[in-house]
Amino acid sequence: MRTRLLLFGIGAALLLILRWLLIHVAPDGLEHGEFTQFVGRFHPVVVHLPIAFLLLVLLLECAGLVPRWNRVRESAEFVLTLAAMSALVAVFLGWLLAWSGGYEGKLVTSHMWGGFSLAVAVLLCFLLRAWDKRVYGAALLLTLVLLAWTSDKGGKLTHGEAFMTKYMPSKLRTFLGVPAVPNKVPPIKANLTSTSIKATGEPSATFFAARVAPILENKCSNCHNVPPYKLVTRRKGFHADRRQTAADGIRNQSHRVMDRIGRIKQLARNGSARSSASSRFRAADVAPY
Image 1 (cartoon, rainbow, N blue to C red):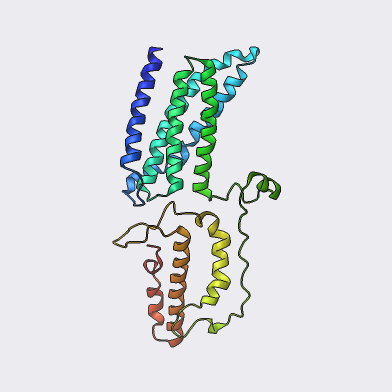
Image 2 (image 1 turned 90 degrees about the horizontal axis):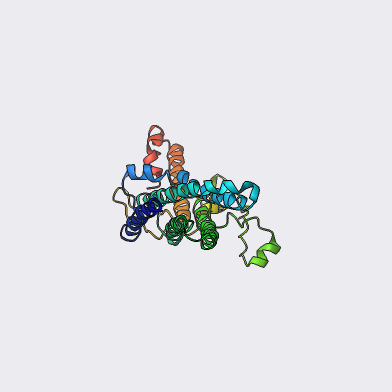
């Protein structure tokens, strides 16, 4: 019991440090260092450990209810200890990734505090297991519910908010009150000729609407049309509107790329700068930042 209380005290102290970081060094949408981003990007790897450990704890506890397999419950405490340790590491790496990688937004904040709350719940389960089995059982079930909610927020961050419900049957969607997902944007049928590019080299708005916009909506907007989680941040002195969504950044970038292509074609037609056309279309000209 003394060892358990010591481990609980260490875990509680680490949670207090994490809570201070989440409040006073919250993600602000700006990038902070390359090494911290490198370390923080291990979060998607480590985050699966507490999920697997908690599910294994549930399996061991349930199997231990059968008299024949009663001894397997002795392993549950060790697995629960691993779950608490990995949850603390995952929360720290998640905060580091969000703070250093230029993330912000309501969904990021919800996922971050959900992970912190999950670490607190796992640590409490670790303490309650030796105190009261019934209270521990209820706490474990509530922890798994919190795990599902936090994992859902993380999945939406990675795959988009409509990832789980995009192909949900209509009857189930109506029963659960889930809003319908907008249909894909069909290509606009337009008579596009070489005159689609104006004499000034500007790309045609009709061409963009007919050919480029449907590709962006159907292929990119699944993840990038949601509120900004990782935004266009300040780089190289360029101050971007932090409210600009990632989808707007993709669309604006496509316009800039087409503008460059149009200008190069115009230069090639005029024969004025064939040799310089390729040099004008540099990676720096079309870089997103």
